[in-house]
Image 1: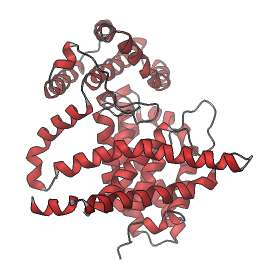
Image 2 (image 1 turned 90 degrees about the vertical axis):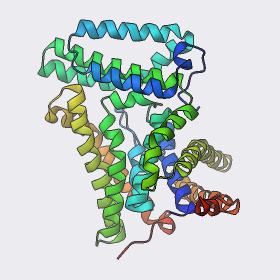
Image 3 (image 1 turned 60 degrees about the vertical axis):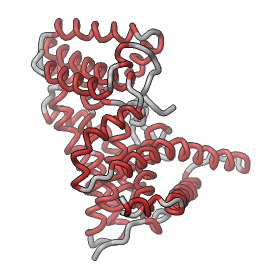
Image 4 (image 1 turned 180 degrees about the horizontal axis):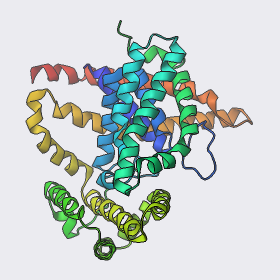
Length: 181
Length: 203
């Protein structure tokens, strides 16, 4: 890995963190429902840096937060997150970015459609697949209940996937990791 | 803005980071089988007293965790619906207790000390290609980039407001991302120019 990739990975990790601190830039926020924009950063990390780079950026973000930087939505940080009910969503950032990148490198679809499917699969489906069982286990809920509780975030997550795919196929395109054949 | 560390001179602050991390791991294993809400509430009261012992800053720190409240309320409601109040109370108390215990380690340990403890733990993995020096550079870069990114966004928003009566929005996104990625590549060039990657190969 060259220095440029290392710094870009750090930048995308910082972007995930910055998205947690700033109120959403351009997403309509449903009243009363706390919407995190951080999985938008996770999708972008996978789309721009590819599977390995995206997972590295998410992993770096997770590490920095666990070390104590309060960069998770709501200004949370530190080891307490590992015991909290949202730990699955938090740790799911790593496989989420990986799957987004992996699919984006392989899907044989028009650029926007490919990026959209990859972002939704990694940044939403994988994230929920990690987050819901952990929420159910820690909070003592059934999988159905945990899934029901998470479903309120789905409309926002669809919007974020569209935003990530739009960004990745327009302004971020020159920086994307070259697709492997 | 960055750093979950609360400066202080308490006993917790003086303990080495590694000892605190091992202690936390042991405590969380011990807590898992506890399901009596009264015992858990007692333990929680003890942890709250430790926070109170840290003074005003410690109490303020407790309130920082109100971000967790909406999630806890939803969990509590779902559990009341599905199980007994005792089980609901026990699991809410357990979550709160574990979170607050872990945060005690975070607030009493400098990020650098935590990083050093991590490096010790990671040393055995160096033979598998993990480079601890690059990892700590990456962590430092993330901590520096976050305020830089936020400042860059605010700078662009202010420039927009100075020129337009409309609110800044989507129009800034493109320039923001291009600027951030260009800036990152310049940082990489600056690191290389100072022999960062060359020193890598010698090691």
